[in-house]
Image (cartoon, rainbow, N blue to C red; front, side, top):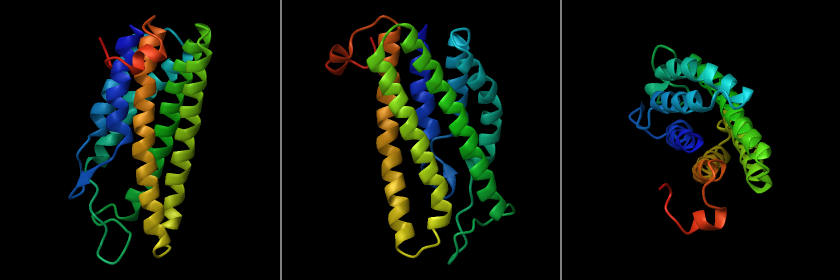
Amino acid sequence: MIREACRRFTWGLLLILLDFRLGGFDLLPDVIGWLLLYSGLSLVREEKDAFQKAGRMAIPMALLSLVTLYNPPAEPGTVWPAGPLGVWSILLGIVYLVLTLWTVYQLFQGIMGMAEAQGNRDLEEEIRTRGLQYVGLQIATLAAFGVVFIPVLGVVYLLGVLFGSVVLTVLILRTMIRSGRELDGGRTEVEFEGGDLYE
């Protein structure tokens, strides 16, 4: 059951954590990611309280993410988004970011609790590390709203955050896959690294 839950967490987080847009449209819709996350949490909600907390937020986050499916590009020569929401879309983005941080952190707490209960200290430490890295990246993302106004430095900073986001997402997905294997009584980490993602 935990393996299937982690499989859904993996795909859900891929859609939620990465944000690629074309003409303002989200190419990796968060709403699908939140629904996958909810379906995975529904499989393990009785295991840890943290899963229940994350599960209660998943559907509201899916609804909120519908607003972010299309973000009008910024007005020429400015950093403010176009469209009727204008600067309010930035405030909405900050709220969405904070709520996503809280929900994903609860997910990490739940998986970390299961690893602790099974005595898997190495996996527990890896999940804790990924959680702290994720929190740090989100703080860096929030800081971007201020740094973006600084010429040149703002562009470099945003590129750095984007690169860090992609790298950390890959690491988190690998941790989810490993969690599904080891918490479900699967192979060890060494065997995982030399084998398929899922059997």
